[in-house]
Image (cartoon, rainbow, N blue to C red; front, side, top):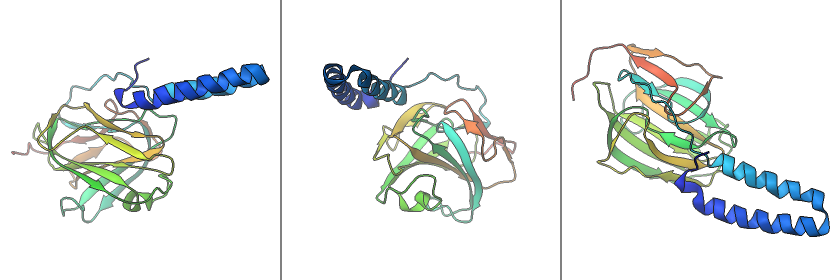
Length: 222
């Protein structure tokens, strides 16, 4: 099992704590030793970085996160572009892989941090009130843009990792960061009747491999 480099600090600390707890349990009441071992195993599982087969289709947008699609909604004014958009919300439980991947190939235009609260990521108001990181991406391959990927914290998640910087070029499905523990990831795309929706609310998706929408319109020139 591959582990993300963004989790090594937490893994080292967790390993030390679980080793101490296991040793204490063995001394005082050995059956309790199974508890820290299970916690340690979950910690390794949480920071897994599973390989993904990236679809070779320039006309699709990929899921930027693992999890469950909780909403597909029209937004009258995208805060970052000022234009109408289609928003796809993905909720990540503590059992999902938390690596974020680019929905398509493109150039990073902006990375905007937003301060806020730590509400439960399942609550609709969490999207607008919680701490978030907003990655504005200009897609390549003639897709319309810009796109916005929002990494949003939850009640348990307290840290957002984003390695992408303005001017960077990302490949489709390329890793660019993660959110540590339960959280939410949103994708905003320019509103158009030429998008074919490929997912629905309640559906599980995987970052970098699940198809969200397909562009059936004309190629957009940069």
